[in-house]
Image (cartoon, rainbow, N blue to C red):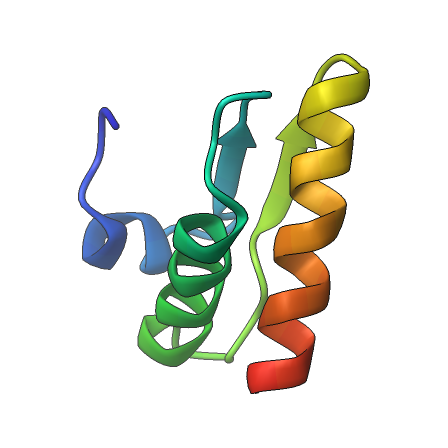
Length: 68
């Protein structure tokens, strides 16, 4: 990851990139962390390209919603 999650949370439009090899649990934790650390509690936008990445992103968003 090119940027620390705390720094990412402080940006105006936080963005996370998900690959087909990303672990949904780790991505969900990152989503939750960015939401906790951001000033307005804004969830990050999630970018996923390809069917496997979209699948992993969908799982991660579901986990993050359930745990929030």
